[in-house]
Every structure is written in structure tokens, then in C-alpha cells.
Image 1 (cartoon, rainbow, N blue to C red):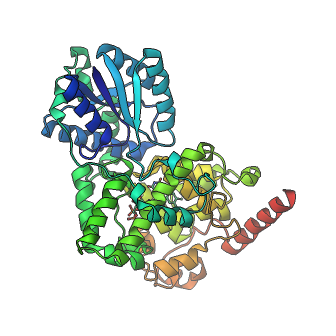
Image 2 (cartoon, helix red, strand yellow; image 1 turned 120 degrees about the vertical axis):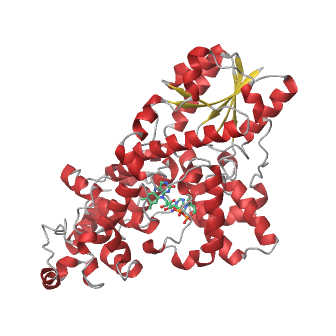
Image 3 (spheres, rainbow, N blue to C red; image 1 turned 90 degrees about the vertical axis):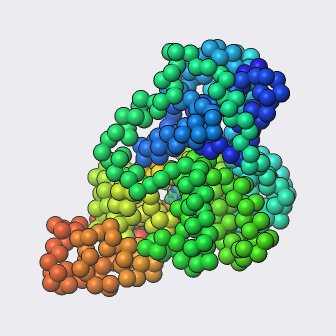
Length: 485
Ligand SMILES: Cc1cc2nc3c(=O)[nH]c(=O)nc-3n(C[C@H](O)[C@H](O)[C@H](O)COP(=O)(O)OP(=O)(O)OC[C@H]3O[C@@H](n4cnc5c(N)ncnc54)[C@H](O)[C@@H]3O)c2cc1C
């Protein structure tokens, strides 16, 4: 009996139950195991995410090789390639780790159809959840819709968090399944991805980034050593780099939430870490879990507000305005700094993500899906569950959302979280000579701009909207919607 381990976003060799189960079964039954990632260019998340994916595949392949095993990277339309692999390698069982959102759920459905047709067993594992989503419900046996009760219940029933064995298993077994000559290309990065990472922007964006399981653990250790104690106080300040930076590693399964949870527990029990420092960070990690449960229960929220009454929202959809936001040319420094950070690094600080999302949907009245899709395309850590939850929360119509009438004032927020303008100066060099006072809202300091030879409208844009007026217009729209409903 030959087994296929289908990798989606579990880019690690250790602590991977689907792989462990396949290897141990093969050992008992003298079967063979193939481990494969299927790359279908029509079922991907976005460009920056694809760049991270490419480097991650290369690293995973190297990790498999170092352990005496083999990783296949199969390119082409998913259903037909899965069909082909099953037929050509006498696969009788496919194992995989269940993932939520697009494109994963569609591919899982296709895998189900292919396996049914081929009479092959398809077995999911739920290792990418702290607790399997379908089994963690409130007292009414319904999904949790508010984060704090979800978090409290999970911490109260932490025994439900699935421990995962660290071992790899006998990965050498994956070499026993000899690839046919016509499939030798499966040992190289898919052509589509090779072409992508050869592009100058892709090389540039990755130049100071390392991916992979080992790097994920290194980053976690460094964060625990240097930043955990100050996480709670510093995490909202974008210039401080006070967060873990683990989100792409988590989303690509290079490190796993359950494994982290038990690792932190053991460090606390042994007295190496204090719970007062660990718990605020763990709480953030549980937001990721919450997002995954929500999207599993409410898959339609990928494209529609969770709160149905907001489906009738009237959005302006002005291409020029959306472009100014995308390019960091809105004339509001904290928004532009965030959008330029995103474009140049594939990342954006969480506080700034909230500000740019609020500005786009509320001050500019542009569709939240335009923002979500830009994030999908430009974030390394673009993830269907976290991205949907983030956008719906900020726009005000997700579960547990910021009320629709509450708008962030980007200038006040900028003063509060980047008082000295360090973050602004990093991403907006044209404003770097402005004083700490003027840099947050230069249009109100025209004399200082003149003295520093900054011509608004030429060297830096005039604000795209008046903040006060756009806030009032937003509140009017909400009031109108309320009377209409
Ligand atoms: C509009 C918007 C869109 C977002 N889109 C994404 C996305 O596509 N992918 C993504 O991973 N995150 C997204 N987030 C959440 C958050 O911004 C990132 O997870 C965070 O910036 C990651 O930085 P970090 O790894 O240093 O986090 P840390 O502060 O070190 O937190 C540790 C981990 O907890 C999880 N986490 C932290 N904050 C959140 C949160 N608010 N929601 C869900 N999980 C969280 C992440 O997995 C993170 O890596 C979005 C937030 C907003 C407001």
C-alpha cells in the first residue's frame, strides 16, 4: 500500500502527524510513501505569498534531502495532477492536514472527488488547529462569536489542546518510491515559481529574509529572549519591532501553534518564563485560532460581511482613490508609511494594518474586498482566515467587530504610537526633516513645510480627503443605512 502525504501549508519535517502516520504505517506494511506539494497557479493566494512559498519549498526540499528523504513539487491543474500521481504510483491512501479558506478548501473538495472516483482513502489530520474547530463549541453547541469567551474557554480547557509528537519518523522511506523519468522535474521548483523568484522585485523583497522551520524556531527563541517581557507595552509601536515576526512562518506551518503552546508551558513550569509575560503573547496567537474557527464555520465571510445587514453597504469603488491608497500616496503620513512598508517588505505592522484598513473603508468609503485583495497579493503572511477577520473587524461588520461608527483618527493614532515620527521617517524620507509635531499632519504646518522646502502636492501629496469631513460623511452613511434597514 503506497501513501501520498499531500502538503498544503505544513512546511516542516518535525511534528507533522500526517507524515508521521504515513511513515509508521509504511514501516509496518512495507509500503512506500510519497510526499508532495501540488502547485496549481490558479489556486494560490497572491504574489508576495508565492515568493515566500517558493523559498519555503526550496528550504523544505533541502530539509527532506538532509534527512535522507525526498519532496516532490508537482505542477499543473490540481485535480488532474492528483489523478495522475494516484494512478502512476499506485497510491491507495492520501493523508493531509486540513486547512481553511481559499484556495485550500476548494482543493480539499477536489481531492475528495478525485479520491472517491479512484476509490482511494482520503484522511485529514487537524494538526494545524489548537483544537479541531468542529469540536470546540460554546455551551449552546454553537461556534463562539466573541473572542474573549473563546479565549477563556480554551484556556480553561487547555487539556483539549492537541499535543503533537516532535519526531519525524523514518523519512528515508520516501526515497523508496522511485520517480518515473518523466517526473524528474518534480524534484525542482515548479517552473511558474522559478520564473517568479527570478524577477528583480522578488529577489529584492527577500534579500534580508530567511524562511524555514529552523529559522522559525530561531526567531521564536530570539523573541522570547529579547522582546517577550516588553511585548505587552511595546507591541503597538511600529518603530520598535517588538513583536515576534512569526506570522508567515506560522501560516506556512514552519512552526506550529500547538507545539509552541506546549513549549511555552514547559518553559513556564521550569521557571524560565513568567506567565505574566507569556500570556499576552499567547492570547494573540489564539486570535489566529479564532480566525480559523470562524472561517471554517462561516466560509461565506470570505466575500460577504458576517453581519448580513451590512451587505447593502454602498461603496464608492473609485480606481484612482484605491490606487493612491495602494501606492502610499494619500497624503496622510501614517497611512502612506504603512502602505509603502507593505510594498517594499511584504509586511506591515498590526497597528498600521488597522489604520490603513479603517482609512480605506471608512474615510475613503472604498470596498473592503479591494483592501483585502491588495493585502492578499502583497503580504508575505497573507492568510485567508486572518485577513478576512482583520478586514471585517476593522470595517465593523465581522463577529466581535469594532462598531461601524468608530473610526480611527490616523493623525491621533500616529501621534500616540509614533510620537517621534521614527516609523514615518523610515518610510517617507521626503518628510524626514519635518519636526515631530508637523510630520503627522504636514498640511496643517504649511509654514514649516515651506521653510523645509517641502511643497505639498509636489514633494508629498495633499491629503486625499479631509479627515473631519470624511468622518462625518461616514457617520451619515451609517445613519442612512440604519434608517433603511
Ligand atoms: C486588516 C488586517 C489584515 C490582516 N491580515 C493578516 C493576514 O493576512 N495574515 C496574518 O497572519 N495576519 C493578519 N493580520 C493580523 C496581524 O496583523 C498579523 O498577524 C501580525 O501583524 C503578525 O505580526 P507578528 O507575527 O509579529 O505577531 P505577534 O504580535 O508576535 O503575534 C503572534 C502571532 O499571533 C497571531 N496574531 C497576532 N495578532 C493577530 C490578529 N490580530 N489576528 C490574527 N492573528 C494574530 C499571528 O499568527 C502572529 O504571528 C491582519 C490584521 C489586520 C488588522
